[in-house]
Amino acid sequence: MSRSSSVVIVSPALADANNGNWRTARRWEELIGRDHRVRITKQWPDADAGSDGAMLALHARRSADAILAWSRAHPGRGLAVVLTGTDLYQDLATSAEAQRSVDLAQRLVVLQECAPDALAPEHRGKARVVYQSTAAIPPLPRPGDHLQAVMVGHLRQVKTPQTLFEAARLLRDHGDIRLVHIGDAAGETALAEAARATARDCPQYRWLGGLPHGDTLDWIRSSHLLVHTSALEGGAHVLMEAVRCGTPVLASRVAGNVGMLGSAYDGYFPHGDAQALARLLQACRDGQAAEDPAAGRLAHLGAQCALRAPLFDAGAERSALLNLLQELESPT
Image (cartoon, rainbow, N blue to C red; front, top):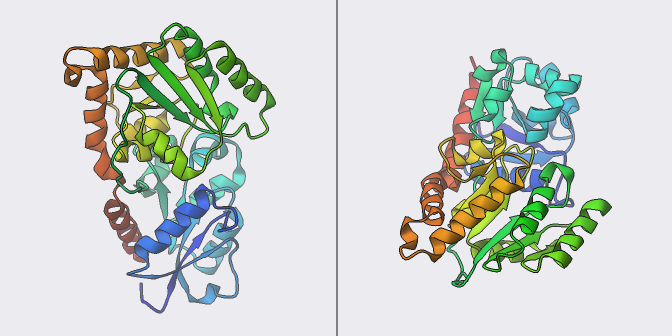
């Protein structure tokens, strides 16, 4: 691709939203900007469309109009569609627009290694895994007299916070296991009330509501574990943040989490199984309090996560994106 042509990143959200889509688009602009001219837009075509040589479109359904317009203007070339968890595990089964976008793309970008399995067999050959990246940050001092686990996620049904609420009740007599929950209620009145009731009944559980990202990251860095209970994920950014700052994870065994942490990881529990989560928390606390903590479950999970950490390095993400763009020049 010549320097006179641009890579256009189509994002359903721009800087004013400051959400995951925008942050991904902005990070990619920075990562490949040394090698290509890059611009970000919400709609395509626009006034600068004539100089675009390749398109990276975030979301098969939400960017469907731009994807269709590109395929008409540049049939059979230069188009990569980035598939989110919603695309993979919801929209592709029900949305004709999402299905059309996948058909039209020369390459499909997925964010974790299990994602190609969710595609129809005829599309899997177009899939390329591009792990997102985040900076490696050292952990902060952690409590020595108890296990501290933090969960980060808005109170939404897809995040299944009920699993954490139930685990807190199962562990209510275990004062040496403390649970911190960060995330806005996001209009979910019933879940907010359930969080308040859990905090009232279980002194070792705290719901802090939404916090600025820096404060949230400090909680992750100062906790022994991150808990992630979601029903559906495309490749949760909070998992890589935990891994990159040395905090091991207890996660629901769903494809999006397994694709991030690996099939051999020993920190999974069945989705929605609060008893299994409570047992894992207790096993981690038992190992932490043992005579040789290095031989315990918590240390074992930390070592497993450390092996995955290089996947989430910015250099690896940049190389994957540059390889993708090279393929888009001659996708066959």
